[in-house]
Length: 317
Image (cartoon, rainbow, N blue to C red; front, side, top):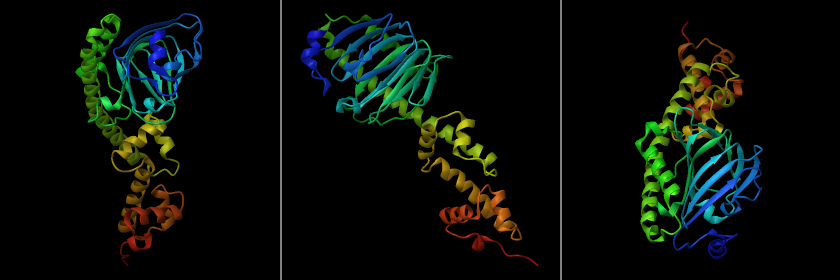
């Protein structure tokens, strides 16, 4: 392994131009050095003592499959290298609870999938409890026709694709030996097909997940918009999701979480102005959930291109 590392690895570009594949076993049973996973660009932040982490890695130049079993462990994927920034990472969790950025994935009721798409910026990865599963990472160029997917959470039992690919990856990394280099190209073809299948299925699930979450958010807005204290932060608390996840769902509908709330308030204000013309602007603003007349005027202008005065219906005498 050390010979392969010297020949095919450098600090700037990482692993590249491997002619076949390498297999590596990693075991920590007391301490985990901070740079234990430096070759992958992952930095160790903290771990539960005594450490107990076992990893078996199958590595090609553009594919990495790792079977992981670990106690609580906190790491950060810094994505400093350009090669890291164009990689997908699929985390197929069989057991335990995993935090990816601000999102928590639990396999309590069956295996679950998390996805990190290509991009810049550090990605915190934390095993919140004892975890086991498979990490599948690959260069986006291996699946050029696939869409970039966002956070998706799906149970293995709900999808034949995720469950089947998980079992296949787990068996592949556990069974392959370094002296089977004649099968390298066939395994590349297999891994490329797994990558495409996961991306295609994840894109479908992400669309479904975003639509479901936005519908749930919209229903909550319908119930709470009349309270001036209701806002995005309150919605996050009630929905139990992160700001990033909610904004992603809103973006899939061409808007933002804050705009959704303001639009609902503006719609109610316009309704009151048209149906209750005697109602004062202060009362309209308060009943619609606006904190001020300024906020009311700004919302009616933004969403209806009008003013409260112009929107007010005729006053009957």
